[in-house]
Amino acid sequence: MSWSRLVAYCLPALVFAAPVRAADPVSYYTQIRPIFQQHCQGCHQPARPQGGYSMTSFAELIKPIKEKPALVPGKPEASLLIEQIVPDADKKALMPKAKEPLPAKEIDLIRTWIAQGAKDDTPATAQDTVSADKPPVYNLPPVVTALDFAPDGSLLAVSGYHEVLLHRADGSGLVGRLVGLSERVQSLAFSPDGKKLAVVGGSPGRFGEVQIWDVEKRKLLLSHTSTFDTLYGVSWSPDGTKVAFGCSDNTLRAIDAEHGEQVLFQGAHNDWVFETCFSRDGKFLVSVSRDRSMKLTEVATQRFIDNVTSITPGALKGGLTTVVLNPRKEDRKVNTTEKGIDTSDRWYDELLVAGSDGVPRLYKMHREKKRVIGDDSNRVKEYEAMPGRVYAVRFNADGSRFAAGSSLNGTGEVRLYETATGKVLAKLATTPTFALAFRPDGKAVAAAGFDGTVRLIDDAGKVVREFVPVPVTPAK
Image (cartoon, rainbow, N blue to C red; front, top):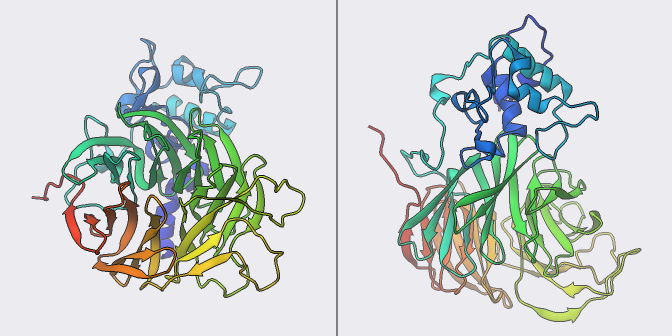
């Protein structure tokens, strides 16, 4: 990336962080709007207008709140917005609700902007906002980065721009659009009971967001912002109470799925964290990263336990992008070697992982042998390499088969493997494939990626249906 492009990419954050003098004009679009995106719009957006107030556009921002003026240009102390965000003597503020007050310099920036007349400098090309009543308009199919089937096999969720599209599982029609705040959707997952959908993404270089949706009501239940870039690899705990995700600040995090409170933070990775999954008892969380490692974290203590993969230089040739728990249940306990923690109630779990070197690998979650420098003793099986980088792996319902999708030089491949033997059951040449999902009945795999087309593939690797998941209006 050139220096000029890097500056342009980071400009909103850089301007927002710069000190402001009273004589400096404050920009709503580049300085004030990012503050509202990070701290306020999760609860005040068209999909979730708490208190009847939305803050995603200037026109909505200046509307009264319960008949009181939210903004009085030139008069910050007469503006209800300032009253809501300024801490009291106990250093508590009404907004953001149930969170720490905004930093003093951000409050001063908002106050200065209002005092200067609360001018709207939003570019004309950026004034249109999206909502359920005004969904995104597509001139071309967008790149698909995430797919998931509902547990009952009724729906297929597909990522779009600012939204998730809900289709019938057989690809016969669009039945719902979940339009949210995040421009980019990186990952999505239905809850274990299928009643909720977790979505992670964000707006690059500005904020990351976790969304929790009520699937039946098409209602946004929770919006939780985290970090200053998009989020990745969302997963649910088996009991449906927690949602985990990876971050580009090299951290692994989890929140309470009902209230959004952060319940886990792990900073042991050295690069972006791309995907996560829980153990089947929910006591452990696994994460994979661009740093070439798969790490095991104990949920209750937030403690990094072990590198599941080898840490020997050169053992893994490139970063890891995807991991999934084998749903096959083997009801036996394991004796693990970690010191200082309880190992008496630990089930045998297996993990399928892949990444830059194109090789899917199956690993035991818990170490049963003492680590020796240079070993890779947790590895159970290594599968035939795919062309290029593997972006997604997914098991069928009983773990007997799995699918993998890759990308190389503008082309892609979807491959079906037999888990126990490693036999390649089918291969299908496609465009670059970034997302996969097995239908719960095991009779089809959904695959999608660069060309924006969803393909339903049978056991023989034949495409039985393909469709563009978004309504497309060709540009005139």
